[in-house]
Image 1 (cartoon, rainbow, N blue to C red):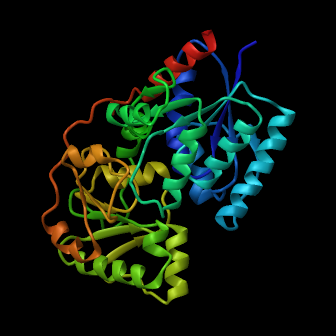
Image 2 (image 1 turned 30 degrees about the horizontal axis):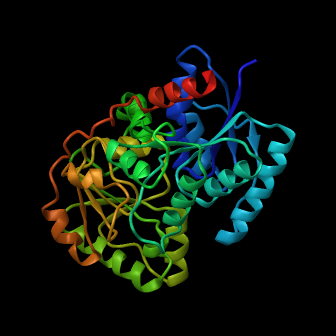
Length: 351
């Protein structure tokens, strides 16, 4: 009987990463039986359900339905739900992706039950100890048995932190696997009305440090409005950001095309035809010039490649006028991260 592998998805960004491994396992001779487990942190169609279809993933085999609450509440309730699920149906190994609260909770629950844990996207560090994701990713790395890093420098950091070389593997950026797999379908999709290829930029904002306090979000909204004078901007509005704007009485910036949360393929189409992206999330791919609205990034390789620049709200308009060039290729960001994770798993299961 094949060993059972649980792939834990908590929030929307986890799914494209896990999809890289899912499809690598499906496209090769079987070494395990993967099951998608959804904790529920993101659960509506706009943030999760439609993404399953776009990524050609099945419905979760296990759905815990845990969402909402403070960091501690969500983490605690997710741990309890994972523990109950794994006491009934114990997998051979649990894969957690990223650094959200649900991922940390699943990793902790598995570790307490002595179930091996693999951390997909291990070793990322931005140096901001006040950032919830930074706390989560460090804690996950500390308790994981397998650590899959996005590049060799990140893998070297993990080894320097004391993780055994056999546990650490530089596999590449799993998000790129999904992007390249689905890019042809995305390019065939129409852009929102009024947007012409190469004549607009994209804005995405959702980090608590940027949107949870009125002064910070007010400054960013004003900066986006100012930057739109230099280049038309499209802003798919994250539900968290929309809620904060309504709470703080902020109106959408003038001259900016406000969009609802987009399906994965629709956002990929938007990105494929954009001139640049200004974001507080991960760096853009496709070589797209990226302006990161944060004081630091957990992906320094994107800065070194030349396609990403850290900017403040006050610097945004000038940066839109004079963005970084297209990024140089980053080693291992080649669409084969899933294959490398599968190879590592094959070694583990054969041992």
